[in-house]
Image (cartoon, rainbow, N blue to C red; front, side):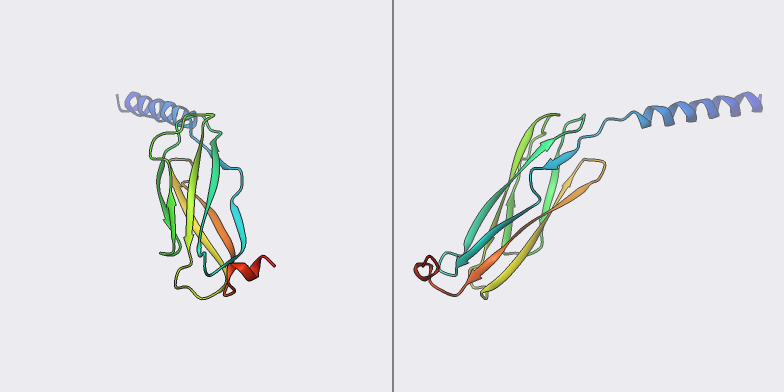
Length: 137
């Protein structure tokens, strides 16, 4: 009796392992993972960029939340599920108000229901102390 119970348990565990191996996952793929906004003036310190992504997986993609590396960076992302083959946009806004001029790089971690649970994207650029009229010359 014990041998039969052990054999049944072994077969069930084997089947469970096979079933979990076939689980379908979403997969997020960004068209680009960093955007350089270039040089801009301290007079116009807010820059917004869009990160387009595609769900190249086999299940619905859900962005659980995003985490920015600084309070000067905000991300707006889709709250609903993205079907396989679908696409979405994450808008990232950098606000350099009251920041010192210079180069910057801000990261955004995108947490999803994918097998690899997060992806990192970045916005970078350089804020100049020069007025925007002088930058264009």
